[in-house]
Amino acid sequence: MKTNEKIKQFTHSLFFLALITILLTLISCAKNEPQTVKPDKNISIENETLLNELDEHNEFITLSNEDIEAFGLKFNKVEPGFIVSEIEIPGEISIDPDRLVHISSYISGIVISSSKGIGDYVKKGELLAVIDSKELAEAKANYLITLEKLELASVNFKREEELYNEHITSQKEFLEAKNDLFQAKIDLKLARQKLDILNVNVNNFSQKNKDNFNNLSKYYIYSPFSGTIIEKHFSKGEYIENVREAFLIADLSIVWAELKVNQEDLHLIHPGMKVTIKDTAGTNQTKAVIQYVQPIVNEESRTTIARVILNNSQRIWKPGMFIYGNIIKENTRVPLMLNKNGVQEIDKEEHVFIKVGENKFKAQEVKTGQSNKQYIEILSGLKEGQTYVSEGAFLLKSQLSKESFGGDHDH
Image 1 (cartoon, rainbow, N blue to C red):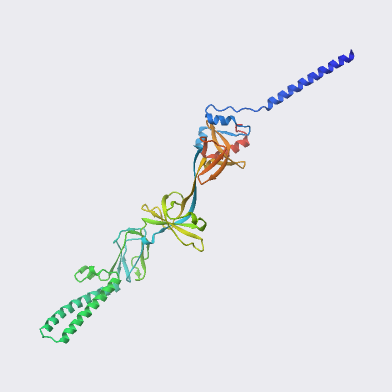
Image 2 (cartoon, rainbow, N blue to C red):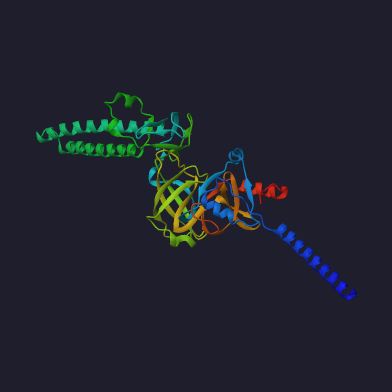
């Protein structure tokens, strides 16, 4: 009897021990059971599905409307599109040599007036300067003298010819008059040629024109075409030599954009290609076409010139200005892409902040593909139509880091 009672007590002890073990196991499992995140009432069906798939490591940021405005957040949709691959070529604006004129003084003298200066726009035929020249006065006076001698020699020859025909004068006197006329013509021709060399129009200069006759020493410099004065090499009262350049005038309504193409990229460049020319600040740009590619490569820089002709009626493009020329190399369609500013590196992995609720954002890990300066291809991690942060993602990344340290983020 005593043996049976002991066995019965031992059995009851084992039963209670097993029961306690089961209860402890159930309590432990209940504590470790994963919690489910309750989605926001305003979450779209598409993002609600995504939210329900989150595991315990997914991180959220909830912002107020004021925070979103303060951060300057902008949003866009993940969508298909084209990744345009461009080659950017440096260059410089230059003057078309056919639209540039060097104006020199043909005579030596003193500048007595000049109302035009650097930067002034002048029209064709407009007066630029007046020079007082002893050399010009002598040349004009010599022309007038030879012109007068020719008239006298012509009258004398006609008279001697009439007298010779009437056998009144001798043949010697007739031949002398003929020779004087011939010599007068030669002298006048030489005098006129000297004025031509001095760029003086003799059609506006004769004895009959009293004003010109009284201003023999005045030399007038006129603009040969319309353009802008970009250089001036004298001032009023200064003595200038006849070989000295006085003005440099350029027609800047048309300019050249000369792109310096590396020899490695030469196979991509040819006349007729479309190109976007922009300044270094990116504030001005225009579309144009490559007109000419230089057939030789510079031995020192190993570059060649691709020339683009630009309409510059607004005077935006200044000669000497550094520019860039963007030429499309490839244009590839991709299934998904987004603004490159939307991709941020978190824990050495690329992430995009997507909107998963009203003012609620999640850092979604993604895999990226090809890109250009503005857009990047998404290979995995996102779906078409999802809303992401296209501007201000860096601030969200900073906010996420703060919350991670402070424990304020949602799990």
